[in-house]
Image (cartoon, rainbow, N blue to C red; front, side):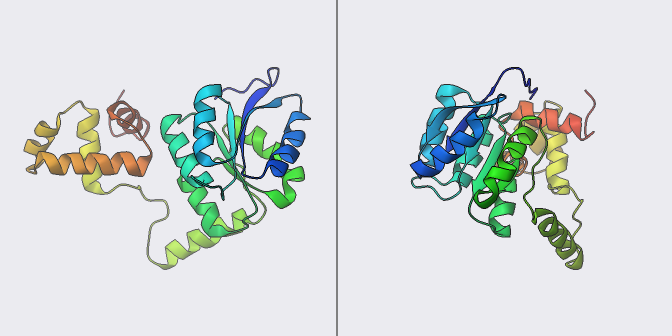
Length: 221
């Protein structure tokens, strides 16, 4: 996303407490480069408001009725992959933090320090940069060291060698039957691997798989 500070970025704010929304809105609307264009009281409403208002940034609480902020973030990332998402929460919790990263959040801001960190987090997300709350770096380092201690490769590919093989063939335009014949497996197995690839990489279709394959050097553009 290209962020032009001359035009206020449109913000969607979702929290199930009206008083919290009001306070956060005051913080945001006090900035010349940001403006709240829509509010939601739960995750499902946040998705509806995102469709209706096409915001530049979504700010989501985690604990909301009907659909949590993490569930909403996952769905918004699927529907509008270019929409940056910021989690604003009371939970100073590593498990929630890592889950937020998994579902596509660009940043994680604690409500207890929202007056200090929120605007910086918004601007970072709008410019395509991650925003980590105080303590998140330590959590990431502990997670990395834990993977190393377990004999895992923290820098390794998220997909298996077989999935990488199928990804390359899909990106080359091969059909499921052609891939199945080449690899001597069933077309259903190919489809299962392709579904796993989409889920693991947070992608939607063959076109996005092809772009990913080009970016990672599996095939040439």
